[in-house]
Image (cartoon, rainbow, N blue to C red; front, side, top):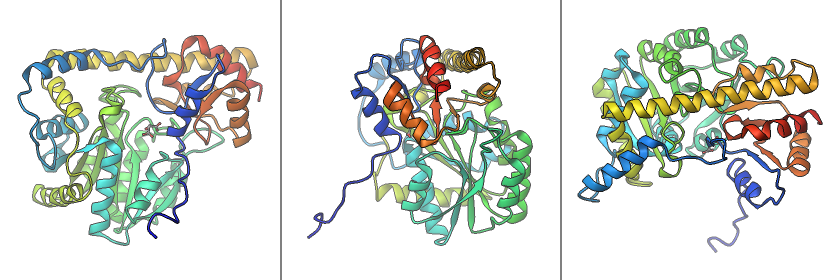
Length: 393
Ligand code: LMR
């Protein structure tokens, strides 16, 4: 009978860590797992601009009636503006609000499947833990290209490009717009130039995931490579998340963007995304998108928000440098200097599963499998303990 033979699902590799850490009674425990920003008190704050926008929304919102399948169109426009800036490809870009960027990844995977049933999506090795499950559940094939060099802890751009020579017109290549998850190693600008040329020559669809804009080198700097590509390739698809830079994690606020050859074609694809949304969640939740719309359409609030994101970015950068200095000071070695070169919330340190287990069981330090630590989850007073524990392995 239906349901009877179902086995229990495997634990989510990221979300299960938060639960395990919460239940841990060790007073020294450190949650370096899930990608949420925390301040030096260990709190994930509601951003100031969000608080102000929430007050305004509470006063001004007069109805909770349905909005529409593509969500808040004013939100879609401000998010396209934020990610694309003055890029000429904006004229042919259309957006659909989605429940988080994972929702956007799934919607785009569904339209890729509808358009090209035997399509392959290429993922970086390593990639965000949810990329492969989403693509595979949508029925797409997944292949990997070399990306993170475990020796240098940088991107192996040449090996990546050599491998991507196999990607053709039935393929999509998924690239992290900035602040690569999980590794922290970003594609250098020259890599964006090369992948742009390859897409033009070979016809593959660039599929860009931007979840951490503003957390690497700055709000504009972080999308320089992506915008270079967007202006030159024939078509691309893009996901954007407001979880991190607006701190709207639980509000599930994301966007899927399509830029096809012409605006007419983009709009045609949009009807298919909307159709895919209708047959799954129907409409995205409103609250987060309404707040983002208020903030990005108000110069003062936008400036306030940008300043807060910048202070978060600087804090993360400071934590990276402190961790490196502490590891250097304690070990007398420059082995971990690469952490300071990485961008965004994460760095992959390259531990074995046994070492991760020791960190978890002996020191109560929780990190994502594959050796990913969330730098943005550290408190300064924990750095000494974290460094000492890592060096004891
Ligand atoms: C992460 O990578 O930790 C975050 O993006 C949270 C998530 O949704 O997996």
